Length: 416
Image (cartoon, rainbow, N blue to C red; front, side, top):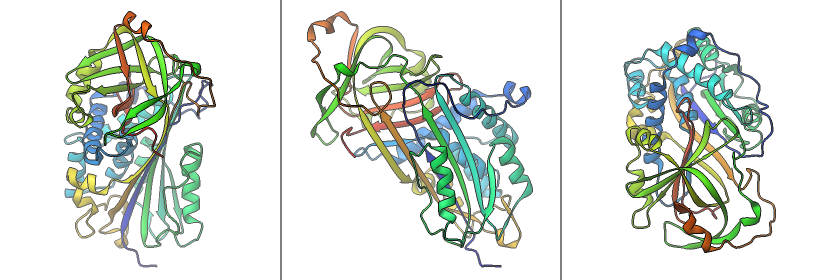
């Protein structure tokens, strides 16, 4: 048997694309037992969100666009958690905010979440897929494999990491599950001493409930965090919005599809405040209070049209959050993941995260349009005007489960 370095590489990938409204074409997730659906706890989703806020703050540098998927990261790490033991399990539970929660309850909640999200809106495609790729020199622990297949609907495969096409096979799965938006998560060639890849992919495809009018899009100035002025296509829309004004910021909710469940929530810091000051307030207590305080008001919104790609390693952020032991080869304990002597001291070597986001008038990449100016005379008729011409924060959330699918900040919408 080949010698193994005994590491587990957790690869996470999330993609988001906004396209015009066709029927949801995602393969249906089988409906779980009613006992699982009825035991769903939104408090566990709140813990996932809180974990996401903490991770976001660790990653945010304030000088570049950022976008993460708390749902994707929490799902992939929850799968990994099923194989953790001892101090490693305790550390992961603390970081994931699930201390004291029964592992079966966590797993069942994730299965219910998969179903609820996949059936959220007939006009929105939202799919979440999981997969496990094990070096064939080892064997899955039977309980670990059973749990991930049952509760995460994960496809589990054993493969020869020595083969030249090993990375291609994994990346092909990623490309398929993200509809071609992300084509690579594993670099070739795969290190043959690696043990396992756990991968989660999220794909979102939807149109605004109320699309922006392309004819109203004009080139406008956006002021970046560094004080630079860049020219970007600025979309505009007037009407009734769910609006909230908080301490040092204003907030707006833009729904997708027809069910008013999935929406982008936008936060614009006040001109005398900053994105950094707003982000320091991000936690579940404030988040819940903000969303519950929204009121329908008439207003005008101006939002940049942009495309964003983001890639990062989550290693240091997770270590800083309290999961360092999971990355230490001589201390990590994932003995519940693989069997045999070679499975001892399995550790996480890398957690990689990629996201893609495209936002425009209808949801597709914008074509050339004829722009017309917006007259200022109409503005006083409305309760508010929100011009996202400076750095802002956004999140895409399912209001029924409370799950935050994506969150990020736009520092410079003109950046490649």
